[in-house]
Image (tube, rainbow, N blue to C red; front, side):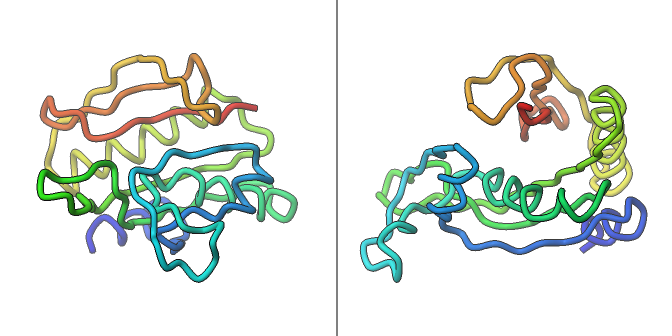
Length: 166
């Protein structure tokens, strides 16, 4: 609750909620093909049968749906993802935080600093953890090849910070 409150009140971000499965049509329109480790056998829509391992496609859809209406906005989601299967062959479902900022005219550098300020505050003041960033590389087609950082809290890798490819 403290994380949601800080993101909404201090940083003026809007909360969004999305489904735990990938939206095939949205991802196709956005030109991305996210990976999944689990499929639903009895999904209501045969194309939406992959359970998400990241919230990034859902957040990218928020940008696509709103960038023509707003010049600047930010949103976040706290939701579930499945990154791996457990040893007992059940889904290892974890709660994750995804957030995005869209700035139509701001520089890439200023937006990255703004996001860093947000996650610094969340980790250091709300969660009481030390935050460090490490420049890295990523092969996802939606991640910028140079502006990609691994995020560490108390020396444990907890996520990543990156710019979306143009």
